[in-house]
Image (cartoon, rainbow, N blue to C red; front, side, top):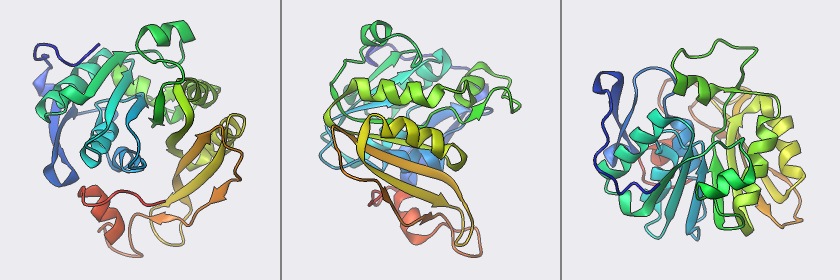
Length: 261
């Protein structure tokens, strides 16, 4: 469905209004449960400048795609999301940030069938970049948020990543880039899913502080490529001490620069 709809109504007592990219984006999101943050901004800042048609799987309230749209005025984005509550907020955020004319929002079950996804607007072999911040936790091993949106954002079965990558590749055009951000512990599953379908894979470990193990990874692959995999130098969010972000990361979070990788 297009976001060119009457203003949506949300329960304001359950929603916060948060600034992203130094205040360029004003984002309404749930007060409790899954909340967009650094991961979403890094994902949205990871696109090449020549991208024109973006698909985000599991878009939530839209922060990653809206970040990409701010950086690239020639970009249009299709946001696929399952949660009705998140879709309402995503549409509201598109309107409030003057991005509605460049955004399409669809209610889609990423784990659903190909015909279901295509009927919702996920055209096969169409998008030149697909991004995703998939569910992080196995629903049998963690305590989930009580709200439906938070539970959907956090929980998955064991073949979730395989199916999400398969969906991303199916919707992407020839030579398209597929970019996922995920927890570092899932790198084996994510790489396995990428390696079956993509080449020119770049792995960017995301580290809180120098000397610490990676907590997240950004993975980028190209459809139709046979180029080898590259393991990149880690991105450090902070210095050795203090709570401040590193200068490079701070520039990304303030919307002053993209991720160069």
